Image (tube, rainbow, N blue to C red; front, side, top):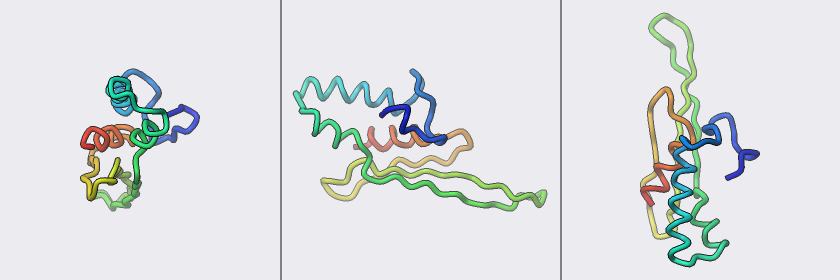
Length: 103
């Protein structure tokens, strides 16, 4: 994943980015398996990503918008469980990594 394609929901390009950590581990496994570049790209790319915005009226009357993410990494072998998180500090790359690790 290039930093040019990153959105504001994506974690910064650094060593603490869970999606980049997953990609590094994936590359080690793909090297051992001798996977070609095309198959690596298919297996590295999530099938579906859903971003939702949920407006909530708070107890003090103010309206806030919360963002949620769900990623289905790969369902080529059938239904899959996607990465999902509900937390104020979650970002899209964290959910991408969770979905990939479940694959």
